[in-house]
Length: 179
Image (cartoon, rainbow, N blue to C red; front, side):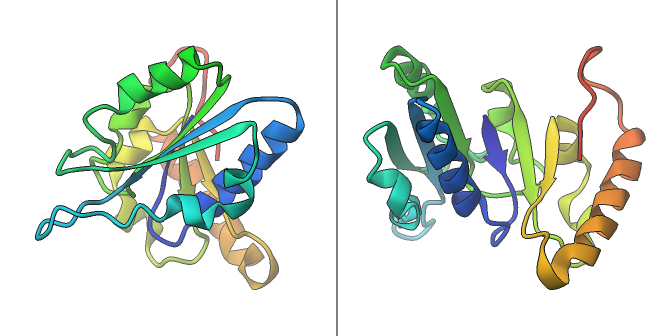
């Protein structure tokens, strides 16, 4: 599964919860988390592993943060090879967290079985901010943090995306993207 979304959408929290659920069901889970690299120093924080503390202690999970090193598309130059290595190593579920969202941050869509776009319910003009490119590639749009005071905005954003996705050309004859 490939996951992308804007900063603050809850990608790491979502991945940790999903990963824990999967390991409890006896799956072996690998997380390949891509972090942006500094254009000045070339360094990267690689903080995803520290934000997934429970999953990082799980013996049936593996978390590998990697810097982009200037690679565009939201993944690293070797993400596809890392997916194959994880599968070869016995991990039956591989989750790839991209560097973030943008109009062209969807290279992972061609590397995975399902591409999930994770969105917060109250981030402003969602349809204007996300744009067409990444929406066209999403197999699933998940509105995250959709509880409490954000339940109503989440339903509104869901309705907007359902309407918007009806206007897009279908990528598959058998799968209709869901929101």
